Structure formats: structure tokens, C-alpha cells
Length: 210
Image (cartoon, rainbow, N blue to C red; front, side, top):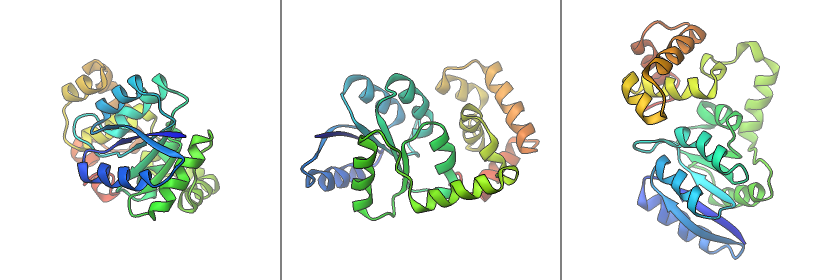
């Protein structure tokens, strides 16, 4: 029996997934969460095989939670189920430890197939993600600026682009304000940008934020 947890801030999405997964005799829903912070607590208190997690949630997002979940429960598979197309986040998140990435517009049966694959300790790579991987290997030097950021730089970048202050980010990520400022300087250099408004424009243009 595959023990599954669901993390999404929309109750209707959790209910839909719960209902759909319940018809599969090899799967059992063992817990739910509505934020990244709750997801970390769910992993800490519940025995899971696969965690199905959204990205955009209030407070601590799925991106923020991913690294902590990986550290606390390295054997739990993490399937990202997001409203953002694969080209926007998939490569970064798979590098950061996600076991698979699906767009919410996918066929529901693909979610089941992904959970089964990930429960075996394997990654679930869709044709769209495989194409992104191949393109990245073919033109490594031409990778988008945000794809060259480290995991933590990418987190800080998204929060700055969303208008959060260094103090807000430091509190959410349990860092000092000075450390956040260092990440900001580093990512600005890597992306050849000069201000927070440049970051916001870049993120909107590349559909990394709404």
C-alpha cells in the first residue's frame, strides 16, 4: 500500500485528489496540509511514501518547504503538482530534490502513474521535462539566467520578485538579514539585474510569478 500525503492550499483540490486516489486499491491517503509549513510538520509526524505538493501557497511555499522536507525525510518521494508549466519550474525543482513535476492540467491518470513510479524510489520524468533536460544538455551555456541560480538563491529571487523585504525573507527562511542581502547581491550579479523592480519584471515576463 502506497501511503500518500497531499499539500495544497485549496480544499477543493485536496478533496478532488483524495476522491480520485481513493479508487486505487494500492494507495491510501494518510494526511493533508495547506502550506509549506504544514507539509514539513506532516512529514515529521506521518509515515509517507509519496508527498504530492503544490508550489504556490500562502506563507511558506512548496519551494521553501522542499529543501527542509528533503533534509528531514530523504526517502519520501515528492511529486510537484503545479499550475505553472514545466518550463518555468521543473528543472530547478528536480535539481533541488523533487522526484517529479506535473502540471495541474495533466490527465489525472498521470498523477497515479507518477505516484506509483516515485513510490519505487524512481523519478517520474514526463516527455515535456525530458525535452527540457535534453535542451539544457545541448545548450548548457544558453540556460535561462534563473536556471543558473542555486536552490537558496532561487528561493530568495522569487520572494524578492513578489515584493517581500529582506526582513520578511530572513524570518521565513530562518536566515539573518545580512545573509539574505548576500544572496540578493549574488543572484543580481548572476542574472545581470540591478534592482528589485528588474527582478519582478523578469519573473513576470518568464511567468515565474502571477
